[in-house]
Image 1 (cartoon, rainbow, N blue to C red):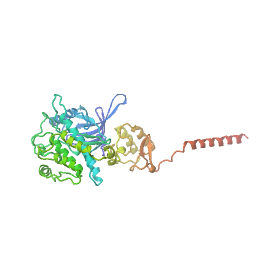
Image 2: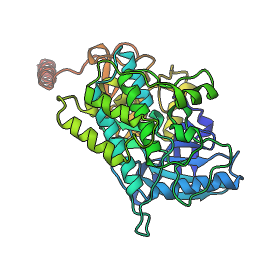
Image 3: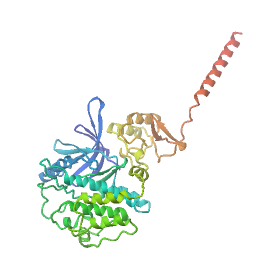
Image 4: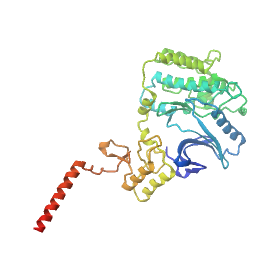
Amino acid sequence: MPVDLNDLGRFGRYQLIRRISLGGMAEVYKAKSYGEHGFEKVVALKRILPSVAESERFVEMFVQEARVAACLDHPNVCRIFELGREGDSYYITMEFIYGHDLREVMRRQKATGRPMDPWTAAAIVADVASALDHAWQRDDGTGSALQLVHRDVSPQNIMISFGGVVKLIDFGIAKVPGGSQTAGGVLKGKYPYMSPEHADSRPLDARADIWSLGVVFHELLSGRRLFAGVSVPDTIEQVLTLPIPPLEGAPPELVAIIERMLERDLEKRFESHADVLAALDAALRAAPLRPGLSALMDGWFPEAQRLESDLSESDVRLVLSAEERGEETTDIRSDIGNATQIFLADSTGQGNYRAVLEALLAGGRLSSSAPAAPSDGAALVDGERVVLIGEPPPPPPPPLLVWILGAAAGALGLMALLALKG
């Protein structure tokens, strides 16, 4: 998304690359850390906003998020690296996930005009259930289960990497026994995904997250929102009383799982995430073959490999210098702000982007249009695919032709020299 370049720069020992999201308490940046001997690591850096930095309650919540998330170690949970403080600003660094949240995935799927394949949806939900089960069962260091309730399971907090890995993120309002208490009358979380007991301010256990995940599952299979009131009170009323609409055409074994996840009677709902996971695993074992998530992500986001890069502020300044010389540039969903669009094939952060930019600037090859097929003017610059402005330069002649032409020119030159001597 477009970025105000004035917001970027150094933050302690991190270089901020672009802002990913902005919430009521904190903002998240894609950032890069540096170490000895040229070591670099791309991270997600979440820092508390100055507007709430002086609130002890918000700082306590922020610190608790880091402590809670740091206790978890699961392939479907975003990893936490560091809790730190720079001046008056607390920050958390965590694993940067090259991918999109499930909300954006659902938008792309909806654009195809049909709901998601039910077995693909079941596989995604199973991975989240596994993460939630780990968070509930994890040893708290005293031999007891951590009993963590996420309280914010929603499409925005489920990431899918381009490699097809599902990750649960954002433990900012997670609840653990003995943790900080919510202020009276304050509901934390996203209302359309709250469990009835959460919306009704009753005590919560693992079944609250099971309901929330059930809402996500229902929406994946139906292709539409389950609870969408015209106001917050209306949405909460729907959560508490609206009959769950049937899922027509979905596999009956998955429908049965969703119906049990969305039981308002706690005694009838799945008791644990492990129970949900066991039911999903049993259904998936008998499921037909389906494409892997990685292949589906390639189909949903074909531009991803071109638009994701790890350009730093110094790289951006190189591009901006092209504008100062009057070279035409534009922005099409670039992660380097309003300066330009450069199509880079490498999304892993290992490419030599500086060399690519310098080559582009030297040749005046900044793109002002969407990427074209190679026959329409695409080219490789230092091993990276870019799109050229205007007509591409003529291709160099084959090496054999170059040798023949050189030999012929040499023979003609020798003959002319002999004629002069004669």
